[in-house]
Image (cartoon, rainbow, N blue to C red; front, side):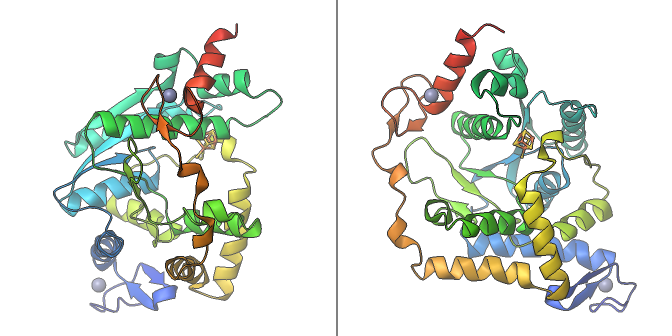
Length: 312
Ligand code: Q46
Ligand code: ZN
Ligand code: ZN
């Protein structure tokens, strides 16, 4: 296996591009690909301030690394969820995020749910969703709220997350199985800040395979948390990823093609009839100032009010 660019020892075979690269050329190739996606989808400019949502995993830390190398003004945001699951998941992920920030002299904002609300995410979920075993929907709502609020309050232009192609293809697969038009119309590399109080959200790694991100983190020497969140076990997204990986094995490039042709179809007007009605008639939550479609306080504030009013 020889590098196509220099003939040196190849370390990775990018089958979908019919490209074998050595370590140095792969580490050069990756930021170029990310830069292309940033430009193609008009994610942000070098003048804008970027807040990277950092979980301590390979994708978000590598994204932060790449953006910094490309010369962008990127700070990090770590949200402590208070999830332990026997592996000290939150503690370890914070340690790795802090370690990366220190080593590269970067600014990391830290928000700990337990310190702010006196409860961990699983505890909040327990108090709000009786009978549900997984805290994921509550967790997602809390993360989205905190990410948007931090970005807005600290004056960032854009929020970047480390979703890779495998993540995006799995979400797309799930949405397609259900023909969830409302979700499909909003899925993409950029979610514009088209309503007041919401910052633009971007996914610069959306065309990069998960195995390429793993290779990048390892070859770049980035220490990251290997363990998944303990609540991720059994998630349908993991099942969809496995299915798509089988397809990819037989047909290299199938995953990328699935995602890119979806974006083309969307651009050509497919799903445009399903204009997102939830984004109409939005107004500011009187408590936190973030947009909401319901009268009165937003879903996050109502959820937290319910949690506070309930005894442990
Ligand atoms: S939603 Fe669920 Fe994730 Fe939150 S509880 Fe863990 S698995 S971290 S992306
Ligand atoms: Zn080479
Ligand atoms: Zn609110």
